[in-house]
Structures are given as C-alpha cells and as structure tokens.
Image 1 (cartoon, rainbow, N blue to C red):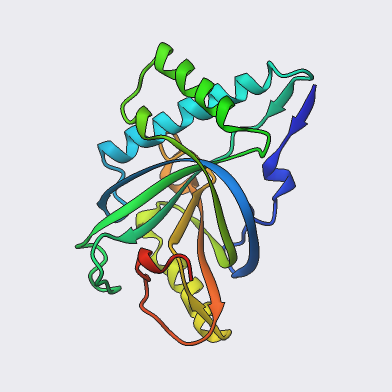
Image 2 (cartoon, helix red, strand yellow):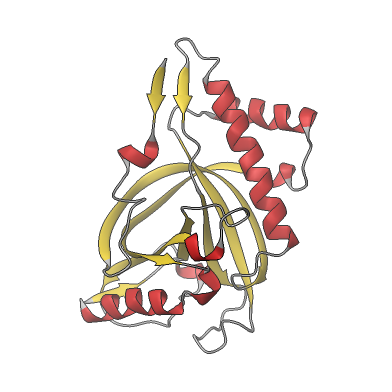
Amino acid sequence: MSRIDLRRRLKELYRASTDQVDIVDVPELGFITIEGQGDYRDTDEAFTQASETLFNVAFALKFLLRTLNPPVEFSVMPLESLWWPASSESSREKKSEEIWKWKLMILQSDIVIPGMFDDAVISVKKKKDPPMLSEVRLEKFHEGLSAQTLHRGQIVEGDDSVDLVYSYIAGHGYEPRGKYHEIYLTDFRNTPPEDLRTIIRRPVKTGGAVSYYDNGNRSEE
C-alpha cells in the first residue's frame, strides 16, 4: 500500500513559527469546501455543522482511496478557513461587528477526481446524511505568494499574531490581497484552549497599502 502524507510533502505550508513570519508560495491545490457566513471567528452552529460535514466527506474519501488498485493510504488534512466581509466596506475596528463570509476547506490529494468525490458524498449520505452535505464542493484554489505565522492558544485571542503578519507585510514592501486564511493544525472541538495551534496566512503582492482585511471581491488580484 502506498502512502500520501501531504503534511510532510507540503511541510513548508503546514508548519510555522510563533516568533517569525515566513513567505511561502502556495501552488494550486484541490480542496473539499463549504461556504457560510457569521460573526468573525465565531464557531457557531453552522460553522460546526460545516466542519463536521467536511470531515465526514474527507474520511469517506480516505476509505475510498484504500479501495484503489493498488490501495492508497491517505492522511486526512486539517480544517482550514477563508474569511472576508459580507459588505463591501470593512475596517480593522469594525471586524467584530460585521457579518463575515467564510469558506471551510480540507486539502485533498490530486488523485481525488470528481467521480470519486461524488461516490464519497453518496456514501456519507447513506450513513449519516449530515446537514450541509449538498453544499460540499470539490474545487481548486491557487493562493500564491503568502505571509504566514503560527498562533498558539484560542484563535479569538490571536490579534497579536495577526498584527505580526500585517506588520511584516507592511515592512517588507508587500500588499495584502485575497482572503484572510486560518489553518487549524489542532482540532478546536477536543483540544485544550492553551494547546490550540493555528497558522495565520495572508496572500500578498508587491505594492502599496489596502485595508487591514481586504474585501473578498478582490481575491483574484
């Protein structure tokens, strides 16, 4: 049985330090995704249901890969999220008061094709049929050049880590673009708050300045 470990293969993307900011170049990758909206960094019922649904599909894909000839052992990747304001106007000061859109994602191997994804969704529907299953998508995402750091502890207390990323961006001739990105290296549902580890990432380009959280409509810049 062959093994695919994307954490090891893409270790520069899923490993970061709390005391520095790294620049990474993220290639086009495949994800299963669900979109929703809510208060910023608020793991409300929809967010929780979406994450559980994504993991159900991710594990169904893991088991389908074992049925290939030859079989493939795949390590399920951590949950990730993109955030952007629902309105066209945003500022750092208002972020806790706005409704934010989010997209939850779990990275997949490039051997996962649409037909296999469809089979996984059918399998999950037969066994559990969780809420939001019909909203799961398999899609490509190319993030490109990005700045990232690691936050330890609850992400709702992560402003210092976010500030570190944005200070680095401003101080090294970059401009934020696209959508603010969090990667939950630990499972927030069953990990003590002090042990949580989250990568904070922001795509960048060279140039001037924009708002603290850019609007999602500019994600293709």
